[in-house]
Length: 436
Image (cartoon, rainbow, N blue to C red; front, side, top):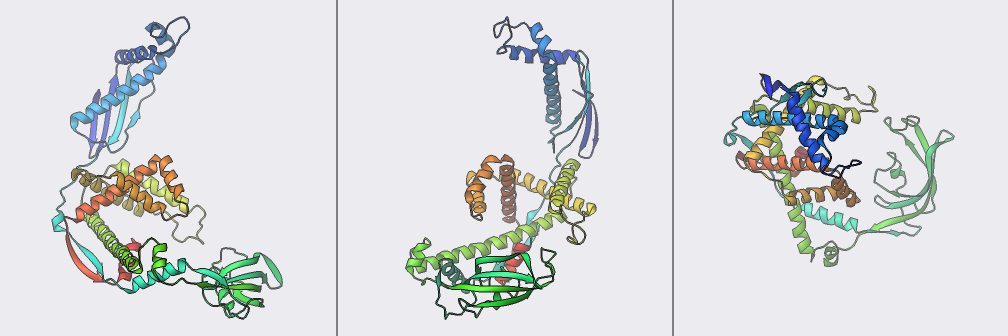
């Protein structure tokens, strides 16, 4: 048991002693249990004398007994004082010698009590965007484009924006061809911006079998330093031009994308866009409420959690800027003071949401998890990889569950605050929501 304690805010330093007699009693129980199935030459399982088990396994049994005693002392202490650990404690002791008492010390932080938060005194702005019918037309046009077919045109047809040009090209700096500047029968979508600025524009207006030069200047920020800012000439030959033919907007197209008719398809699109408006507005309110909570809630923070959060931020920062230098990344320098302030804010908000959500019985259901994983998987060409990732990575599942819990806690909080509506253009709503 602990014999000394020192408390400063949320930080506890305690020390204690485990007698050799108590350790050996616990070790004997461990050895006796182990002996029920252990095999030793000359003895049947369950009939090995304790003295023989001590002779061979006492050292490891002592180590296990000490671990159990430390955990028991800690658990009894926090239960008696009704404390909640913020993280695993740091245990210090100078090993052990069999037959000797063990003196040890522990340091740990506890979670703070959540201060009272009067949500009814908080007001957030709910940004409302008026639905624009043109968005349905844009969505329908995008569906038509996604179902378009690129048909080869005759030799009289002149390439236009959006067409596919099948070309050979070879690039030169001066009279010297440069590495990586040549391809045969490359399919280039004109207007896609896939090539150097100005290249695609000079293809427009040409026909199949045309051979000509394209003159461009590489951007100063081009990734290949030997080409950056330099003028180049490309010898180009067009093999064929393909024009995208869009299908008619009719019930057959609607059925091809899972709807009964064009009317049902429009209704479906309207719902999707309306839901997107609502979610964007909800994100904005969540962010605003977080800002209010970050400013208004005052509480002591477990230093161990702040340090852990800061270390994670530093690792992520270093990974992102591993190949940076002063020239490439002007913002890559680590600002310890600001980063610690940000870490403290994240820890505070995390504790507030965790405590408030627990008090108000916020739960993450199986459907919540499945929907979140499906939503993420749908953004990738091969969704199976995302499902396999979560199946094999329990830490990722835990992190995702935590994110969903915090979001649901915030949404529940928002039902208690006052909301004032403000009408904004849809562009502004999505710009503000995506900037957070």
